[in-house]
Length: 245
Image (tube, rainbow, N blue to C red; front, side):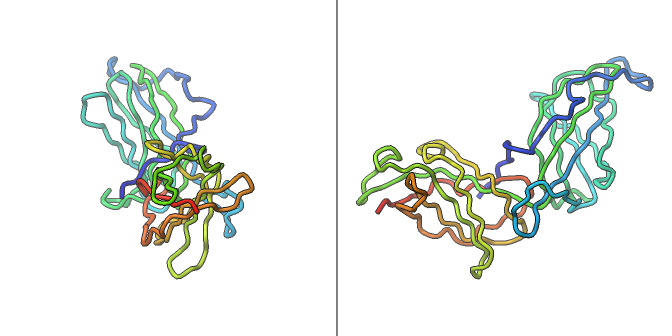
């Protein structure tokens, strides 16, 4: 199963300075510019009711990656606890920029931001800010509906939304997300949950089609031992079959 980087709320949020250019006094190479990269980390409270609780650094290093089309990414490492850090002397141009929280060796990755498109201007410092969940992750899925063994559609069975319920192994702590319309993950579409789920644990996931009253009209078979390991990403459950009753 692959992880998708979450691109919905909080992720890759630009600060009020994003897009502004600050003239750098210390840039000696007229063909390069600098980035000033900041990050805000979030978690949830114990009851998962508040999604804006400040998060902490799960690793000591933030790796900042900047990639131009067709080039090998440039990488700069700074301390996570600092909350921001410079990326110096990048050749001027347009980059895809993202950050990863890792251990000092860079082998173990704990969380990853969404990507931003950033223009590096020669002789200037460009601020880039990220917001991400440091210890919470999400699920992504597509689904096919069937009725009496034959393919059907959300519209044909009056399926309004879809619930993705993740329960910790052993039956403790369930995390239910029913924000997605049924059509959001139908066919080749991919739907991503918005309920933050703690990483570092294994889950059993059930995907259910709901009617307009929020009641299940069909449930997938349990999808067992799905492990969330990287904060701020969405674990891809791939295509799930939902038999309609």
